[in-house]
Length: 90
Image 1 (cartoon, rainbow, N blue to C red):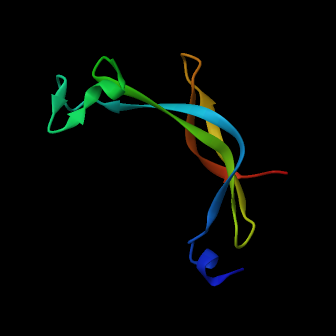
Image 2 (cartoon, helix red, strand yellow):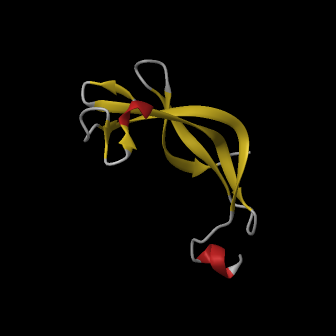
Image 3 (cartoon, rainbow, N blue to C red):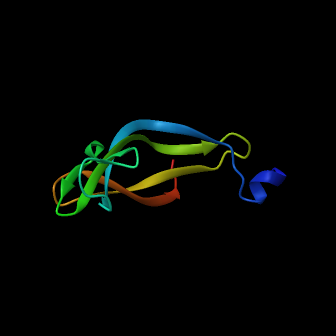
């Protein structure tokens, strides 16, 4: 195993199919634009902003070959959220 990988400094490359994941963050700024931050990027739901991002299902280290897969859960509204990583079983 390369030295950098044994220290936890992997060189990741995305693998697998793209998936759109969603998450919520508390809305700290009330109103439109304040201090140059536009809050209209997220959808507001009861003081929470919902964000989304297109990510890949897995990743692989270019140095040591370690493969990880995202832990995805289905939310109540049918969207996906990522809750961490797990070893890929291939």
